Each structure stands twice: as structure tokens, then as C-alpha cells.
Image 1 (cartoon, protein in one colour):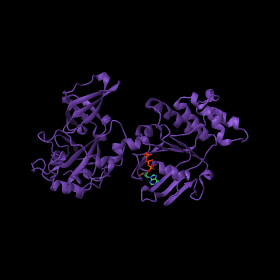
Image 2 (cartoon, rainbow, N blue to C red):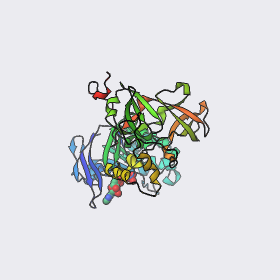
Image 3 (cartoon, helix red, strand yellow):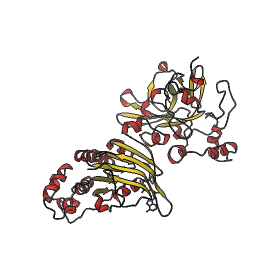
Image 4 (cartoon, rainbow, N blue to C red):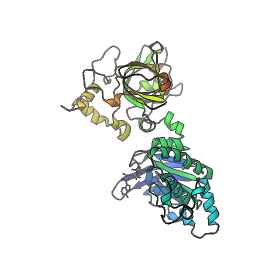
Length: 441
Ligand SMILES: Nc1ncnc2c1ncn2[C@@H]1O[C@H](COP(=O)(O)OP(=O)(O)OP(=O)(O)O)[C@@H](O)[C@H]1O
């Protein structure tokens, strides 16, 4: 078993496609790291580089401290399982699992052990056609593990299974990798699967590592708006916001509603350096409240629709927020020059005019003295699109609201996620480094 090191790893294909860019990561012996990201972000290429199926154009791959760039795949002792595995239809399960060992001594014992690890002991005499899809996938894994590889590479191993089986098997896959203690790199585009199985999650975007951490770290403490948006379902609510000081507090203006943080909030000083921000609210950082409980940490909204999920409802509210453009969350950061051009010269006519119109500077008011770009919610403009909804989880036991109802939503301010215009998280500052305007008189 082996620690795996990726040192400034890069892969540019002959046609110029940059699949992996300057990726550095240390994966501990026996650790299970899941690479997750949208399609085309370079996940599979990372696995292929580790396996030796591709040659890096920059950087190195290390196994146990030794650079393995020159080693051929078969000399690296890695086992790979792909989404589309191929079992031999005319061989039994036992013969399929033992196939990589051919006639090595002790095959039947090794096969029995690998089968037992994956719960396949009772089906060893069957042929693949007599197995379920999930069992076939487990046979492919057992076959990969029977050679006792140094590194286990799984590329979307469950992607072709239906959702129920996927959820069932992902626990089994993770448990098996941990039981064997083999260092595992696991690729998926399914964020729920990543959070469920990983020791650490590595989030990739456009070939570059965005963040790596335990599932709790990347979910609760995302480094960027992309990571916040990519991980979690329902997705984090993301709204455009403006920040300014007001009455000794810091206002986070969502256009038609304002959240306020006390000036001594550890994030206040950093926040006040940004006029416009993106505000992230995870649905589980919100809960319904009575109007009497409302203070600076609440929002109001009218229920648009409710999805019943058995134990809970997912409630969509119109809270008047202006959604963060997808370009900023999922595809790329909006180019400020491009945005400035649009603001100066909005396209006319067109469906985007309403949205851009709401971004245009509005007249300064005493409450908004310093910043021109407030996301003003204009009821007279185009209807707010559905993706501007505030999404909240409500336990079914508490009784689900009905469309049209007006709700007060308490916001857990400690879990308010704030991002600057480049999508980078605005974090609390260590004491003593606050900007002058946030200091108490
Ligand atoms: N042989 C190749 N030649 C040129 N470009 C390639 C090659 N293989 C992959 N790419 C490109 O490299 C990028 C990363 O591909 P990769 O398969 O690693 O992504 P991925 O994150 O695994 O995607 P998916 O989730 O869709 O499998 C993509 O833009 C892809 O089109």
C-alpha cells in the first residue's frame, strides 16, 4: 500500500485542450479521495495519469515517495474499475474474479477472500447474466482487488446503476476500500456520492483543484462560490448582494430585503471592503420562524411551490432576491469589463434586459449612500425567474406551507456564506486587522 503524490501535475492534449492544470495533492496511505466536478473538468484524466495510461505534460506522479512517470501501467500495480467494466460472460463469478491471477498458486483462496470482502461468496458459481447490475459491479471490483494493488482507481464505478442501488452500493464500495486499507482515488460527477464516500473530497473545475477537504470542510466551509454551488442538494441559495454600514451594523442588502450583521461580527471588516458580493444561504441554514422571532437575521417570502419529499418539504419562496448568474457559479467568473459594457449599454430589446436593468445603478438614497450597483428588485420589471427562489427545507411533521402563504425565514448568520466578485469566500479576519471603518468608536 502506498501514499500517492501529485506534484504540479498537468496534462495538455495534442489539440491544445488543457485537461489538468498544476494539480498538487498528497493522498495518504489508505486514504479514499474522491475527485468530483462537472463534466469535462479533468477527473478521468487525473486517474489515467495516476494509472500511467496518459503521460503528464507537466509535473509528476509519486507512489510512496518515488516518481513513477517512467513506469508502465502494468508495473505500477494499480487496479482500475471503470463505469463500463467487461466481465467474461462464459466464465463463472469465481473465474472472473480470479482471471487476473491466471494460474498463480493459491488462486482459489485469494478469490474467496476478495469475494467475501464484497459479499459475493454465495454467487461464486453463477455467470454474469445471472447477476444484478450491482452484483456485476461488485464482481468487477473484486476482480480488480484480487491482485492486491498498491492503488485502487475507480472511475464513476456506479454511474450506470439506478439511484437506489447506487446509494446502497456506494457505502459498500467505501467500506471495502477502507477495510482493505488500499489507497483509493475515486472519480464521480455526483456530489452526493462524493460527500458520502470520501475521506477527503477534491473539487475540480476546468482542470484545476478548487478545494480539498473532508466532506464536512468542503460543505460547511467552501472556499469559493463554485464549491458552495456544486456541493449540496438542494443547491445553496445564491443571491447578489450589496454591503454598506448602517446604524452601527453591516447591511447585506439583497435588493428587496436586508440582513444585518453586528459591526463586531468577525466578517464585518472584510465585508465592508467589498461593495458587491454574492450571498450563499444553504437550505439547511434556514428555518421557518414566527414574525415575532424576526430580527436582523430573517427574510420574508411568499411560497411559490412545495416539493413533498416524505420526511421533509422543499419550499420555494419568492423573497425578491436577484440570483447570481450561472456564469459566476458554475461556468466561469463574469468578466467585469464585459459586465461593465452591458451595464453601460444594455442589449435592447431582449429577455436579459430586465435582469441587467435590475443591476443598473439606481438613485442614491440615504440608506445606500456609497454604492451604485444595488441589486434593486423592481416588481414592475420582468418577473423574477424561478432560480431566484429562496429554497428552504421544512420538516413535514411541522406541517408544510401552501403556495401563496407568506413565511418568515430565520437565517443562521454563522452559516451565511459570503463571496467577493471573483467568487472567493470572504472570511472572518483575525482580530487587530480590521479596517478602520468597522472599529467601534
Ligand atoms: N484524448 C484526448 N484528446 C483531447 N482532449 C481530451 C482527450 N481526453 C479528454 N480530453 C478533454 O480533456 C478534458 C477533461 O476530460 P476528462 O475526461 O478528464 O473529464 P471528466 O471530468 O472525467 O469528464 P466526464 O465527467 O464527462 O467523464 C475534456 O475537455 C475532454 O474533452
